[in-house]
Image (cartoon, rainbow, N blue to C red):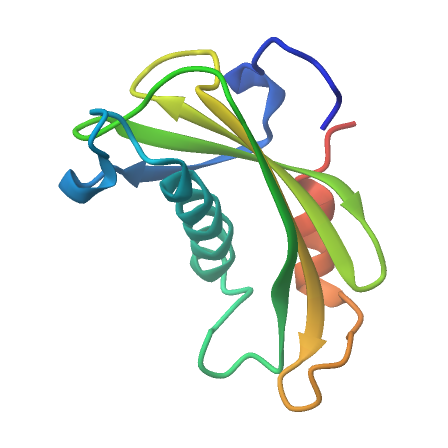
Length: 146
């Protein structure tokens, strides 16, 4: 993501994944703890993949391992907020993908937080990089902004 200071908007993303905060997501300061943002990014990406039949955590021959994450915070969120994760692909390599995500609180148009999430696809048995091909590559290309 670029070094900007203003949050993205829903229109900046290609697809969306709904999430629900939980009671224990709030910390002693009364808002969502920063570690929860990373869990929401992980849930949004992998939930999106599973809903489209692109990942079965128990049997997929290849899957993405997280090699890099990052987050910028713009506004507080916490239980009982509904959160929608906006998804887009910033880079698609031969075996890696860089997602950009925006977390939107309730019906707000500006992201409360933005994250980056990099997967390197590996073979289940060897754990060596494996090419992103076929239906999975096509789905990732559809998440790229023109």
